[in-house]
Length: 384
Ligand SMILES: Nc1ncnc2c1ncn2[C@@H]1O[C@H](COP(=O)(O)OP(=O)(O)OP(=O)(O)O)[C@@H](O)[C@H]1O
Ligand SMILES: [Mg+2]
Image (cartoon, rainbow, N blue to C red; front, top):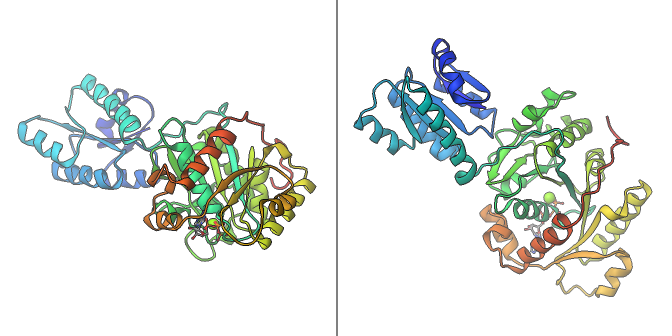
């Protein structure tokens, strides 16, 4: 999709040169509103009828606020002054008003640059594509669910080969936005109006672009909004998001809520966290027994031990006796973890060689990327 800012009469002539779907904005203020509703838009063509100073101010603002967006400017006359000003403001290309073939080329170059250089992911919508859903859960609070979910999502997206969406299902107290320093302009609460008919376009309008390849569906920010989200919205979103992303990583609250069960139902992989202390281990045991009771497959499960090196009087034998299954990752304890949270930069990106980053990267490599995808349950047991 491209936004063309130009009075409607002339827009019709230009649209075919832009390729694909085009949204027409009468003014730059309209273009801004359209952009706010579409976090993955990558191209705005500003027509010759729009005032030059307004166009330059818009390009300058985009350069800071949405660097993945390319601004292509059309002008009646191309002179050195306009070209210099445009370049300074961050306009990608200036094209003569009637030169439709140069416009088509400029748009193609800008799109390629957005995808390859500035890299904000363009979620592809493909009904046949089926990304993996990974739910990170622990029944005890503070075990490191958000830390693992954020870092797992970041490491899967790193390098730009895969697209990843991180979903914050801790609806009341979600802090994914803070961990990634992402502005929660749109959150899951804006999806309420789409209930019953969530599609890829609607879902993508709820997302916040966080890093190249990484988008997030953030938790509500207003008190009371969490209670307004029905589990069926989670089910719908987790049906659509895997058609848009290679991986959907779900962070959860520390309770077996109906929303968490909706996510478990939609998941190809359950990542269950514990720390080496008796209450967390007891809660992990209860969780494993509960998942068995609900007949979730064992082979989609990974147990991860966070703060694995904490000296708290329990041996690995003590831990194994409670867990009774393979522990697939041991993530050490380090003060660099909260430091990375305070910086708003996941430790796997900030310090990729750090032992915590290496443990999470190894887990992603060996147990997420290397293992064949098991189909998620097709019959949703809980919520429709
Ligand atoms: N391996 C680690 N080493 C040091 N600190 C850690 C580690 N993992 C998590 N933490 C810190 O522990 C605290 C709790 O972590 P986190 O928020 O990820 O847990 P949570 O399970 O999501 O908690 P909640 O149940 O409140 O959502 C945070 O301050 C985090 O920085
Ligand atoms: Mg959390």
